[in-house]
Image (cartoon, rainbow, N blue to C red; front, side, top):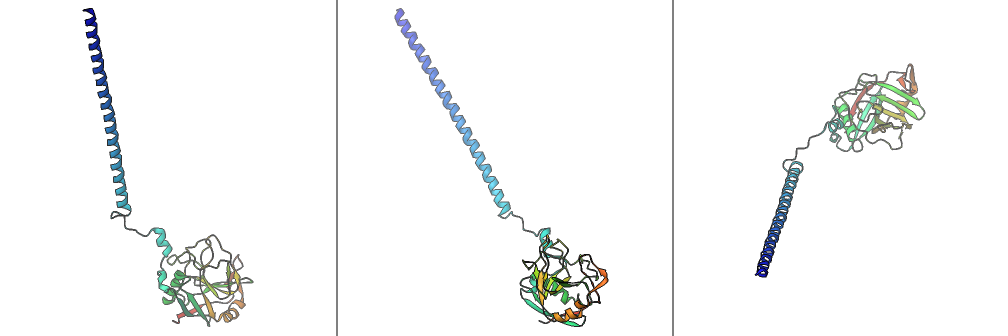
Length: 262
């Protein structure tokens, strides 16, 4: 009798243990499933968020929402102030005649190698800007021989309403052959090109500065020797010398006219 009771109690204990173990398995399964479901849900949210960011990025950078490109301030400054577009020079050579102190000079402007400078120079010719202006600066030193012209007031001051850059067609070696016509600018400022230019009447070495060299816009094709004998040989005015060895010409020098020939 006692033995039967113990066996029954033992069976009941095993049943309780098995039931408890079964409940534990169910609980562990539920916990695992919930953890898996949570991870899947979080992953889905992350994927959806990433796709949303990607779609917005594409829409606002390359798609319909992308802003219309507008020229920056620096870009407009590079085009210049008061000068025509570089295409004005038509990417070709232009022939003209410049008369200085009664001396006719044949000149050629290079619209291919220096389109912005040539366009600016052509605009000045068409506007008859140069007629009546003076050549205010002369250098006759060996290796540095030039005549600078085109100042708005005859003193070499710049014209803030007519500026452009950067430097175009500057010689890599700093050598400017006789007959070179180059654009004057302020030291170290590649965007200070303007009306003023200089004519080189003897092979000259002009070192680059922080902005580089000087824009070669063209060259003299005839009359250079007459300019030397009629203007340069007269020398500098001893009362108007600059600290760099240049100075005002000893005789007044005036551009009487510049006329396009083609």
